[in-house]
Length: 310
Ligand code: TUI
Image 1 (cartoon, helix red, strand yellow):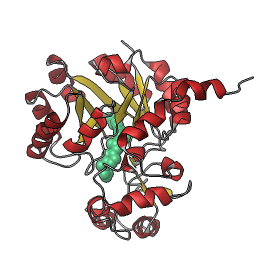
Image 2 (spheres, helix red, strand yellow):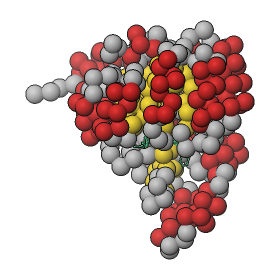
Image 3 (cartoon, protein in one colour):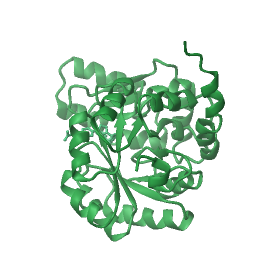
Image 4 (cartoon, protein in one colour):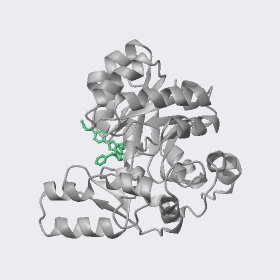
């Protein structure tokens, strides 16, 4: 089956990014109620938190939703077990290979959609039974790879027979059409959903996205093994100048410890890490989640007909 809406039993071929510290059960339910696939972003949370958010989400929507597992988290294996116990239908993973969990998830019929950073990993995931893969270009916010959406989506689409979901750089109908032209069967969006009325982040974070220009994101930690795209601010500038001066990874870690939470919960413009993708520059207003999702798809046929090729 290559149809994402049929596979996931959702209205639009859209899944929400796994946004750690942001996407709780309440937010995931809003996205699922709007016709996409909402995800609980487990981030660095423990199993108890994830279990509670699954229950909350269930109470707020009858539509399908999933859990995103950040594989670098020390709680990843506990959460991998909890999604089975709680009967979660869909799991997405990020920041590593979910190989060791695949068999257990597939045995209970969980739909597994890993984020892959290369065609080689995509092929491995297909062999292990993944139902689709998410391919994230470096335009995305948060933890990113090197390849652009434009180049990695078609290469992975050519390498595997399961559907590719494109992420990184999509915030309007043009991005949807472009990634489908590249071979995607669905999209994942994060930044666009940060700039929504229902998103539970500090208002300073939303305003920073609305005010951002095209050149206002930067990747910190390219040398650290965990490069992260953020909106430029005092924190990112300090990080980059310290890393240029040869500051140790340990000291850099100390600088950024808890900084994403400072952005999300306190809106701390100086000390926060405001993770966001390059599309921040094209997001100009705060919409409801429902409107943001509708605007990506509802006029797509009209827009497609307006393209002048040849
Ligand atoms: O995971 C993300 N985005 C994230 S995770 C995150 S939390 C964090 N904070 C600080 C440092 C590191 C993480 C914030 N944003 N997106 C999915 C994603 N996965 N992007 C890249 C990858 C990835 C990388 C390597 C997936 C697989 C992979 O494979 C390793 C291997 O075994 O080949």
